[in-house]
Amino acid sequence: MVSEIERLRVELGARGYDILVGPGLLATAGKHIAPVLRHERVFIITDETVARLHLEALERALREAGIAYEALVLPAGEQAKSFEHLERLTDKLLAFRIERRDALIALGGGVIGDLAGFAAAITLRGVDFVQIPTTLLAQVDSSVGGKTGINSAHGKNLIGAFHQPRLVLADTEVLDTLPRRELLAGYAEVVKYGCIDDAEFFSWLETRGLDAIEGDPAARRHAIVTSCRRKAAVVARDETESSGARALLNLGHTFGHALEAECKYGGELLHGEAVAIGMVMAADLSVELGLCPSEDAARIRNHLAAVGLPTGFEHMPGRVWSPARLLDHMSRDKKVQDGRVTFVLLRGIGQAFVSHEVDPAAVEALLTNAIAA
Ligand SMILES: NC(=O)c1ccc[n+]([C@@H]2O[C@H](COP(=O)([O-])OP(=O)(O)OC[C@H]3O[C@@H](n4cnc5c(N)ncnc54)[C@H](O)[C@@H]3O)[C@@H](O)[C@H]2O)c1
Ligand SMILES: O=C(O)C(=O)C[C@@H](O)[C@H](O)[C@H](O)COP(=O)(O)O
Ligand SMILES: [Zn+2]
Image 1: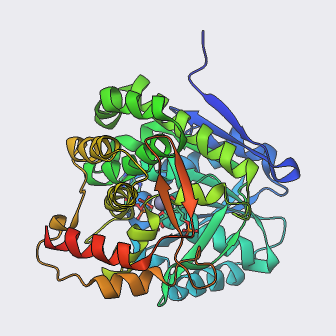
Image 2: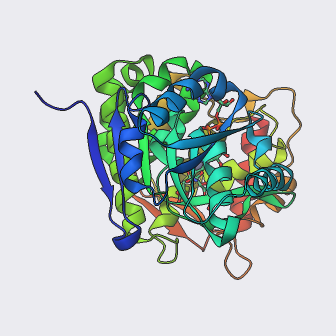
């Protein structure tokens, strides 16, 4: 019988690790985690919602494997990615007298993964951590690649570190409890991989993406495994986003992060929703600059809209947007070089590239038109 568990590898030499994708991984987590531990004590970091739904299963699995644990529960939502919550978390770890051979387990979505991963990177100057992603977004994107961090008053993810996990366990069954809005937000990052360098995957999503969202096991698994494979390959080429290859994973994020910052990370706009709008903006900008066929931009917009994702500013009708304020947010992006905002643009679906040459006037005109539409 073919195993239901798919095993992928992030090839990073001594920092390399496995990604396991499939059903039932939470219930057997202890067995998978034990071999990567240096000491049989872990700290589970999770949020209130995930704790209510899935913590007990993980605790049982750890007990069965003889692994001692403490569970630390944070509030749910993007606002936990803050100095305040980081300080509270590291204080608790230190109060429990965490030791260097102990490990953290991030049980939750991208917020918990980013925060717990950053706490692991800096506590005692670095302890190991394991990712158990429980949202679609975290399974296809944030649990892989070692970008960890928090938001700052100056912008999204501006404080952080690269710190790779020792293992990623993506239990596809935990997605059964995820609200549809969150599933869709994660799906935006799935679409991103097709747009970047996999036109065939994008076409597959056009026909089977909705099945993956609805929970068809084969379609969902294909979407998650393909996404993880693509991300693992990029991370292996450019772990710390220094050669430019990894910056491609930021498609839609220059715009998206500016929208999130403007909404003050309050839940009005989820990260994946901001990325969906951001990808449409990046595609439209590419068309405006004469780089991308308008048919490809239309396919991206149409597919995102067809599954129920936002594609423009009309998604938040009550909010007043200012192009100047959005440009100001973008000017603080981590990809800025010599003061110039960097964009990931498209020559077509599956042909993303990084540009440092975009005229800010073109971006301002695009924003002004999109806000007015
Ligand atoms: N590090 C990276 O490479 C990377 C990549 C993409 C996104 N991110 C970051 O990830 C964050 C977004 O992550 P997210 O979309 O997972 O949001 P999230 O972590 O806030 O989770 C979304 C919501 O779903 C709830 N939830 C989680 N799992 C659940 C489950 N199985 N059932 C029911 N509810 C569940 C959570 O409590 C939360 O309320 C952003 O901060 C973004 O910047 C990081
Ligand atoms: O892993 C990456 O690299 C990404 O860019 C993935 C993004 O989806 C993710 O949102 C990431 O956190 C953005 O990174 P940032 O460096 O722009 O903060
Ligand atoms: Zn993202």
